[in-house]
Image (tube, helix red, strand yellow):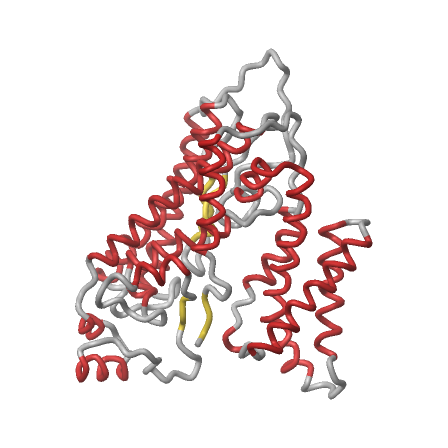
Length: 404
């Protein structure tokens, strides 16, 4: 994908080549070593962070070193997750090379928090002027990455141990007692901790696959299993890439399928939906925070409307009609959700969609820049394109990770 924390493929800072100049994708030794160094550092960070998630007796990285068993489990998690990231990015890379488009090798982004990485990015260094080339470069990454992530997940489901496997983990005493007495995982959270239980959001595809296998752990224990957690992350990151806005992979794909004018409308409406999800999470938090200072009714809605107007103004620049229409649309969706389903518990909010609202508006952009030569895609490309949009629906989670 392009210009997001996990993968990037297109930059608006293009280096335009003359028509006579042949694109060159032959990195020198220094460049290769630089990319390799970033990759190895990412392996280290993901291994250490992964040991905290999937280890039997995890410790919080980077303040302590896990034991050997946890380190090996963390390394397995790193291999699985980075296999997905690598295949995704090299899908973009080789599609660019095939079409003789100047492109960098993947830059891996290590970070000593979270899962140890913000993903990997490549940078395409010239405009992509034809629709079919834009589609190939945009679709190659998520399609290839999806296959790897799905394979990892299926292996994880097919090799699941019996429920008493949880006896190996430190803590989880209530869960251990339940499993020992019943031989199965509970349908409800058994561990009562002060800070809540880390829970991974279900998706349509994950839920459908899980129903076909036995001994599948609940979503609030799934992250302890390397294949399941790495596979879920791969599918979710694929879905994030496939959001049909701006220069994300999904933006390239949908733009290639329906053209500039239609994509412009769809992308704007979709962005309003993303900000609505942000509002669903943020408003209960604002209500609890502001109530300590004032009892004015609906003040949290006015605060969010002000923030939302800033976001929409950045996204749509001077188009006041769209700015006002999308602010109203977003607020209406949020209000409708709260009315029908009730407000989200502030403790269950991940705020990921608030981050993405700002990220799309300020970095990725909502609209896709026009391609010089719009053309109808081949039937095969159109099938792959619409299947990619289906993958997005199957793999996205409205609340991907939260404390339950």
